[in-house]
Image (cartoon, rainbow, N blue to C red; front, side, top):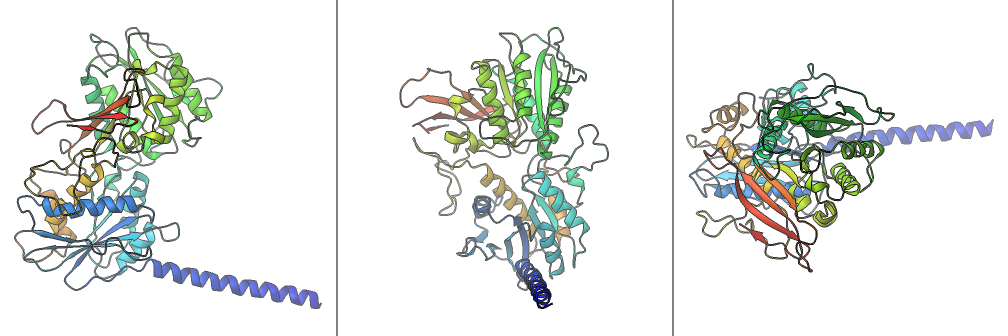
Length: 534
């Protein structure tokens, strides 16, 4: 009996401890998601990101600080206080305070960090209860996160006017598209009716990349003289069809060039961008005639350099159906660096000279930093000699040039790298600077003596921009800053010696009013050469 009493007492103690732990955890979570108060007369913008995103926050602060020099026609009208942007303790809330000279009120942009315990929905609920709620929420660092954030903001009851949602890097037109039908899936921008996207969409990315590739004779598939675009039908693959599904006939139509597209099904960004590339390739009327061969890989996990089983089967099928010698094909790889690197490496191992017969095209999932700052380990060009065309939302090599009319704030200069130096690109900083300029123009209107206090006024300003920056839905308009980056690996042995040039990165854009693509930067890549050439 005494034994059972001791067991019961022990169980009771464990139950009490568990209850105490739950209560403490709840209180801890509540304290973690307690937004800072907003001083009277000021307004807030909430910047939601995970706690490890220090580089993104640093680039954001950099871009906002440079808004001091970017206010259209009114340099130095903004004062950006970054003294609390990088607090010494990670538990503190980083903050940027913006003030426009001659106006009352300040704008406070605060980084609220979400985790698995205190997620985006928790923060939105807490922000909605506080008075005043934020004027805007900045988020959407990936398409699936943006979808969750938009749903949380839509389903929350706000204590005041609903904030504006500013999406930064969520490019998917549709999140979680079904492989067979997407008719019942809403467009991402329509999930929350007050959303505005500062990046381009996957549809715009695919159309831009396809247009560029087909206009460049050194990259375009096939030979000059082919015409029309055709799409193959549907046929099953062999015994691993459950792993890698190939949606195409395996025969080649006479005079057609096979074009290979891969989607990784566990990544909504990949499946959506793959769909947009296929749509763009189908709609092209420029030569050559293309036969689309589409692959569906169930998962994107794998080793650093070795493809998973489904990726291996895809690679084998591509190698077996390359066009004849003297012809060039396209490979659409809408994914991030790891699956792309594994796939390209396996193709090169199967055919070391495949770079002369295949050009890879992708969106913004492959960062320019992968080929520039991190190439020694993330993308060794000598081992992966396949040309790649990718998309960026701003100029990745937009360094400050001598003689600019407005000097950048001290400590926030974008200095071009010297020979032998490698540093991060400027794409994110320029993207955030554009966001900061548009936002602060809306928050500090020139015809008022104080900061705005309504998200409705911000929306009105966004919709009345001239020239227009957003379309009627809230997406960024085409023709407002698309950039193309081309990695061209050097042929083996072209540049002997320790300073061997492994390849070049070229940046193209359409200059104002020009329908043609213009090369604006060339960067040579080498083991001991990082020179930047304008």
